[in-house]
View 1 (cartoon, helix red, strand yellow):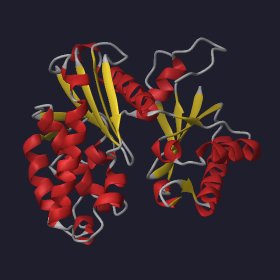
View 2 (view 1 turned 30 degrees about the vertical axis):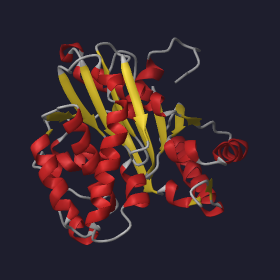
View 3 (view 1 turned 180 degrees about the vertical axis):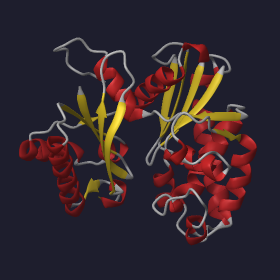
Length: 314
């Protein structure tokens, strides 16, 4: 069947068309992505502005038109931390539902962790045994561990690269005192929750997903995305540490010149690197393997696991 996945994230609104069937690998057929940065449309950090609401409405309408043009049989729409934390998030989604007849599910941080973990498990298979999965988004960080398709332990923290950049790195180039303070903050937040994962023991396979990790791996020497999803890509703790130091001394314009760094992600790459470095240090992870599948694929896989007529529940 042809499925559409509408991902309303903190950085982008991404509509992905996938051809999928039970027992088969979902194949991407079309992708449409727009940088919206919803979190920057929060008035006083709380309510989504009218401009943000109107832009989101337009982008959802565009996605639905694409779905019709591409022959999509079912669209799965979800939102993550920016809508989850907006004081008027439910009202905004209610307006969209009334005007566009589309339900948008708001995922919790734990939902994100579980669905991403499912996608990584399916990609690497049972031979990975105990997986530990790290995912840095625009608004939050998710970490999960487990030996099955559902994690034994997981947590979500408000340590997304976009959020931390917006709230704590206000100067360009970065102020060294702000960088040090952010580094301390990140490590304290992760350390306070580390027991939820560490009590299950070290992983047999440590994996990272998300654009932040992909770009860090790319600038550290991993193969470009043009070489396809089946090329093995890794990110070492040494490389993350080195790039964290280098990025802290660069302006946003200088980061944009690094091969593999997109202009839209350049401002938040330093914060993402600091989160990655802290997570790898605190969990004593020497190397992460990059997984091409993440939350969107996890949602599709969950949908395909259902019996005909069974409602999708996250």
